[in-house]
Length: 185
Image (tube, rainbow, N blue to C red; front, side):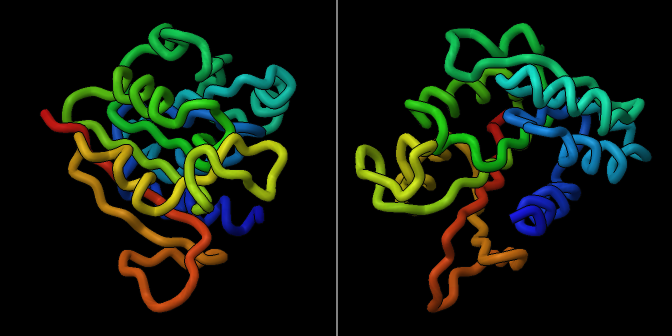
């Protein structure tokens, strides 16, 4: 799984610019990876998470001069507003862990500057309101439900199977989708 997570962060590097939020950053390794890979462009990153222990670990183990780590509960109303506005927002494997994926996308969209880039990934499943194989997931969206979250954006869907990320769906099962969405100006 670590290789798959790292593959998503490496995939995101060319899209990351300006002030960037890594929401649900966990231990912080992805936030630091993005900071190191984009430091020449002057990118600054905010890694945010709901788990204080993860944030403490991130601060101690993944410090980079272009990063800060902050507490944020994406389920709380207006929780992200205190973090400010961002040119890029990255969120990997988050929306299946929140009660309302639509509310989450609306919250991050409010913090995304016009013309900004949103990069979100999630495992595909049986859809909203359907049981999942994980006790930690509220739902696992279908491909159509996932794409529908980005109807107000110019979005492209990518597919991931293991560390491989492709832009076109071949006749095979892809357990995970990654949307790269650009907010209209």
